[in-house]
Image (cartoon, rainbow, N blue to C red):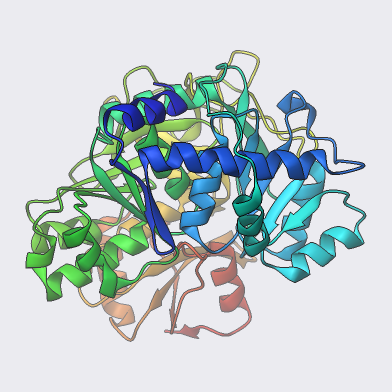
Length: 502
């Protein structure tokens, strides 16, 4: 279903249906249609006014690129959504990325307009000779008030690019890729069939729009006639209030937010009576989250989906320990060895996916990495195995370590400790060892339990080569802005002596 087509349809039939709701404002579907006319007018005029505009990456077909890098989820969302019905490519750049990363993606991708309140970012772009335009959010809004509205938004050709996304940016150079409108319509078709962004459903998706999970929630809500309720950051005190007052029945959030939801519901479960469904991204959701949500809100269903921004939605887990995923109908999944040969069930290898929503490839200017092979199958180098027709993920290539001649999945080591009483968050890391090449160590938060109890627990649940050989305690594990534990940074803390060895 075309995104703009559904927005126009909903605006005509249900003009007051919420489209985007946030801390800085709210737009109905009819309001979004009118707002988009001024958004595009400002963006189009800013690009046209440049005497020597940056050349957009060839893969865009010459369409100018506008990047939004601001703290306000509401304004970022209305700009991205507003541009969807016009000849424009949008990007969201995380303001928390290292400055060098942000400058690099702007210059290499050929982004011509950046909306950002970071003066250091603007200065750094000028210093490298970038010829585009930076507007603060205040500048942008002032221009909107004076702009002559553009023609109404319209459904665009399916082969036209409209989203520029990035694979990473916290610890490595981001790889950029495009989504065409047809690819994203295919993606919405998959999520609509399994993740329930239904017409009229109000979805809360807290977190910056630069998170792919939040951005996808926005697009799928608009594409299915629902409302996207956003938050710049997750505020536990506001969670219950918003669910009760804004008619929210569905939450889409990263696992760290799910834990906060559980904590809030324990204090006041009646405020969450209207909540029906929680969707979280990332495979191998910790069992403690599933158990905790089921305990405090037994009427709420939890779906943990797996996908890759480059490829789209791939599968999900609705129960059990969350380690086995059902691959969605129409999605091909195959495990291959390093030579590209298919592996039998049960063997660990690289996961390859065939999906209609998959991007064509990475922008050549940002990386020489290959996304899709000549046969049309794609990989982001996740490692896994097929067990009885279901997919079990073992992590990324860097999460698989060799120790004493054995391959060990660090995420599988971590999962073994999910239900250990008194244990906080954990991170398994590989440390250099002169005899074995590397050994597995477990780093955990908090003061419990003891080394003996940890070792006993591990030996009862893991193969011998998976049992950690060292144990470390740390006050707080390093995390990304989205709450994910940073494995490399954790290992660095251990090696520098900042974690206490048991």
